[in-house]
Amino acid sequence: MSDLGALKTALVTGGSRGIGAAICRCLARDGWRVLVGYYRSEARALALAREIGGEALGADVSDPGQAQAMVDAAGEIDLLVCCAGAALPAQIQDIGDEAWRELFALNTDGAFYCVRAAVPGMIRRRRGCILFISSVCGVYGSSCESAYAATKGALNSLTLSLYKELGPSGIRVNAIAPGFIDTDMAAAYSPEEKAAIAADTPLGRLGRPEDVAELAAFLASSRAGFITGQIIGCDGGFRL
Ligand code: NAP
Image (cartoon, rainbow, N blue to C red; front, side, top):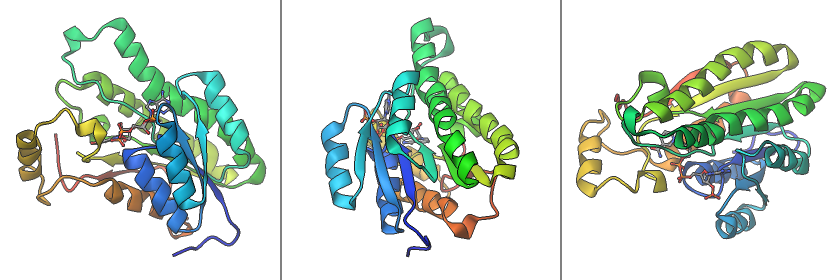
């Protein structure tokens, strides 16, 4: 149900697929004007934007110029959801320089570029909300996913500084730390591996993109108006 007085605008990076697409749908249902961020999945982003009455904006967020141009094209943003990301399952000794840097460029630098571009307008209007889609890996660590966990740990640290820096300007900053969510990112796991993860999850199932999206929609709403500086798990109780 909408609790937005005037139509407000949300930009969701990584909005073309998976968790980001579910967030776009939930926000649109709640009355937001949604800008669907995409990189390679243009057709999916355009179809989703049509479905929810929003617009699609393309950018490689790991490129500072493209990230800035996307935020500029978005105009006044009340909500920025930094969801674009990728995983890197590998043992530490097998991670090359380029793979390490590429992962940080997308998961961490990409979020930084978008936040840096969006914050001046939010400060000017003295309102705004920033949501990072982090991971349980960034909170608890994860064997053979150390680089990925490090990129998400950095987002958590960013959350814990930015809410202090931006709170006096009326801007809330929170992170969501999803557990195992069944999206394209989980495609490398076999059905047996997924069943084992579900069995290790106290709530007995894998996460769905909608689980994360409902939390994001709540945190973005005025019902969460006194919540900032939090890293909130959405994991069915799953611990690595
Ligand atoms: P996904 O289905 O693989 O989607 C990844 C999204 O990131 C896509 O929309 C993709 O856009 C976008 N993206 C990739 N590279 C990009 C780039 N260079 N510039 C801009 N956008 C780019 O993954 P997901 O599972 O929904 O994950 C979404 C977020 O949740 C990620 O940050 C991930 O780390 C986090 N997360 C996922 C899980 C999980 O179990 N699935 C758990 C914890 C956290 P295009 O397709 O348009 O290129």
